[in-house]
Image (cartoon, rainbow, N blue to C red; front, side):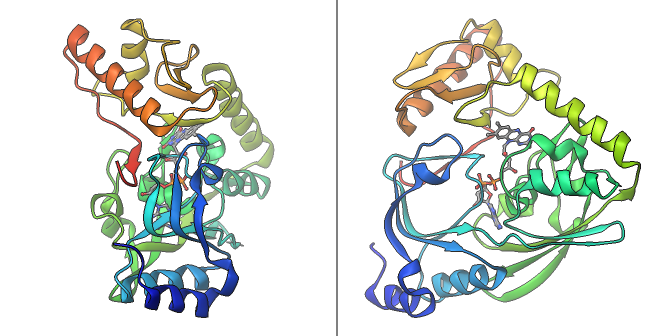
Length: 302
Ligand SMILES: Cc1cc2nc3c(=O)[nH]c(=O)nc-3n(C[C@H](O)[C@H](O)[C@H](O)COP(=O)(O)OP(=O)(O)OC[C@H]3O[C@@H](n4cnc5c(N)ncnc54)[C@H](O)[C@@H]3O)c2cc1C
């Protein structure tokens, strides 16, 4: 059902011409893939974010919060309802604590923390996307993850604002309560607890992690790891062993550098990437008896 005229009017009243219709989401995803958003708003502040969510809930408009679009495959048909692109980017340091608005880039939090001699977030220096997206999926790398640093997240739900503690967020491997109950709560801001450290040592560690990524991961338009690592193994190793590196469907390719990275090498559409993921899943199942589970989320109309 299209967005009602009452809902459009409420969005226009709150945000004026900033509300866009049929905005191509390929402009806002790391893989440069995705059809249009029925309605689209770039939220510049936590206030915008909360107000847009409240209007969507009040008028029964499906709501999708888009961070960096670095862990989702948006369908070619796009997303119906309201897509709110999170650009709330405030960041405050207080001793060893960091209060980040949810649209701030995870990489910039890592870099700025290191500059201030704060330890415990260097692992995040190569993770694209926003802090809100990182909390949602419990992003992690190099032995660290969001579960290890989050004190609390302030969220808004249809019932109002709430503060969720680290325990409330119920983090699991690449998951949190927010991911298991999607689109019920919008993360507004997050408090991180870091530790005092030596900026030179931390910077060296950050550069080491970035070097490792440059050596092992392909550059270009990608959604990062397609599949979760199955217990005791690596999805990339299995896809490589199945002989699939370099395989293409349409404009989508399994990277020749890393089997779990799928690239948009031309004009890939979402159905190319999905078909390639299905092919990899089938081959790995048939050859090794392992069922790969998607790490990325399929969003929109399929
Ligand atoms: C090159 C590359 C490397 C990567 N490496 C890693 C890695 O090492 N480790 C890792 O864990 N991930 C990695 N990723 C995946 C991705 O960067 C992370 O999962 C990231 O945290 C996603 O954040 P995002 O803002 O892009 O979320 P999006 O992709 O925009 O959204 C993901 C989900 O989070 C929800 N969401 C986003 N913001 C909010 C909010 N404020 N409130 C409520 N829900 C929200 C969205 O609605 C969606 O359901 C990589 C991706 C790429 C492209």
